[in-house]
Length: 356
Ligand code: COI
Image (cartoon, rainbow, N blue to C red; front, top):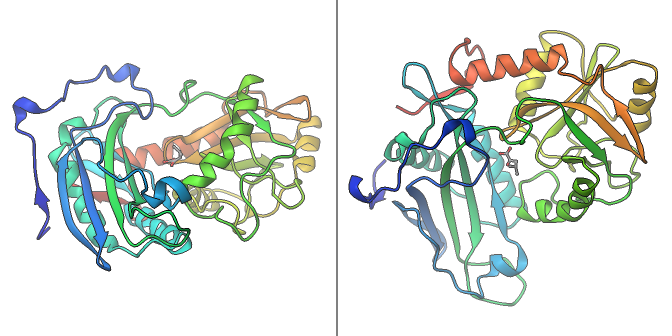
């Protein structure tokens, strides 16, 4: 990429120590370098790769006060032959552009962002772990940096990409999780920011999720914010349910994130059987569970990939999903998606972008 400034650490100053890949959690370790680009004087400027370090921004930076802050999540996979692969990266930058639109953040060049990401990955390629189920998590984000305390869209921003090696998102690994169905609180509002990756959506989820966690549920499933009747998403994942062999997920009606993994699941599952994007009420799910027709439930997301759900709790009652273990379609989707990502299975949809 032309005009990309690079300030790369000499090998002797790099922090890299091969992490114990069996113990990699999620999101605690940062690689040596990051990508940074500034917006001022009406345009994005000075794209650069520099050592990972704390940012110098004003305490009056508008993003810290009024939440003009958006992010993405994707992963880089190391394959058997040493190649580094990205999964549908253009979809992430496209969604980021939509987030920018909704948050009044200036548009950026999506191809430039992808080229910069590839350069960053080449600089820090020894940080991409090798064990099965591990990857390098990539976190692009934009924050408003203009120092100003009036409420309006900022005129200055920073676009960053940081990365770090990760294992499974949930402590359980690829194993059934327990989900609490939130009966009252709302994460987003109709006509609001639910369909984009605004940091504020995650802040809005914390209080209820903490309460669910105290009750022993590792994730919280949101119902629609108007009637609290239809299932929506988990916050870190989109949700799928299988009832009477029909694979059902919520439609993209403005309050849930259009997940890249969600779209991949839909694409694969449609070639295997009946799939519906339709409103699905929690009552339909609990009734199906009561009479043995709720066969499987799982979440999909970049961080979590495919995550089986073993138990749902709604209004004080636990409902077992299937036999409480990993369902056969859940397993098949996991194997197929992970196989495409790591290159052990063919990529008929052209989802993979190679880095090196
Ligand atoms: C992802 O799946 O990459 C996400 O962004 C979800 C979560 C870690 C916030």
